[in-house]
Image (cartoon, rainbow, N blue to C red; front, side, top):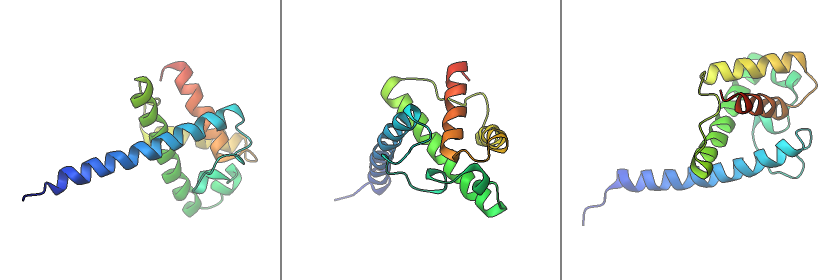
Length: 130
């Protein structure tokens, strides 16, 4: 019996991404309602509780934050496209451009959380159809 490992790996990967995306979408919805309070959501990684000032405090922290932002953003988009058929938010730029917009927001609002500024930029681009 021949097993197509690549196909099984793809199916498992898609299932995992679907679960993560659903959780990310739920988290995003809760954060959007109250971007300054993520106490009710199990969030993980650099952006889950860090302030903008902490994120921008060192190159290694910025690198961690970059990874968190593009992963979180990708999860939001993946979920939106699959569940609503919406166009991906941020399609007018790339990961570097998205992070640059968030970084500008964080520089102007260092005491705010990284997640609140990420959601602010996400919702702004969504409203503008970008």
